[in-house]
Image (cartoon, rainbow, N blue to C red):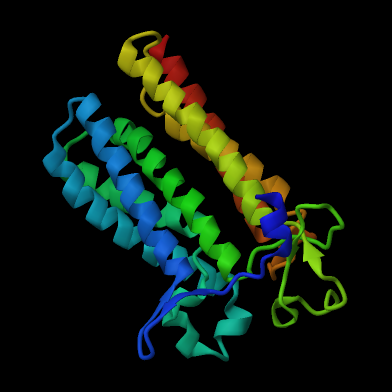
Length: 268
């Protein structure tokens, strides 16, 4: 696997039918969405919740998350998009920000749950499992698009990047940190924690308060993302030399801690 990544130069196009091209990015987004949806149906069944709500919720959540992810990214990289407005709608070229997806998805979840008078925190705990599965597969799309890679490295698992995709000032380097892979590995670890928490609740081993799983997700992923930002080379607005994603991650960490303490205190 490591040798493959070190020697293989990915092509963003999965299948080319002439007028129609299927991109790896879109393929992995769809695959992650499907597998995430299956996981959600499984958890909803185990928690004995009404599946009719899930079908509608998934539709609104995915649409809102995608819009939020794209809008966040366009604002994030406005220096590029203000002179390339046509690119705003070319999602297959990449450019979906997970922080935007979290905001958009949670907004949809809040209004949907409020309308149907369901338990917001329980549904949040369930939804983040599907969201994280989508993230794991979505990062493979970044790999094939040759984006979101890290600084140059001589390590054996460094990935080759085409000259056209190398940032200014790094054109003489051939291999770069596969930050997409680091995030995938980290997300798999986080997913295992979330699944374990759900298992504890469903088996009655420990009755965890609703909202704790989403707090764990926000905290652990934000810590992971904060650290990886030190390696990434893609453009980012900064405040006092701190990358925007790191600032947002810090905000989410505080929110996660607040949610966790609030619900743990209520349980007592």
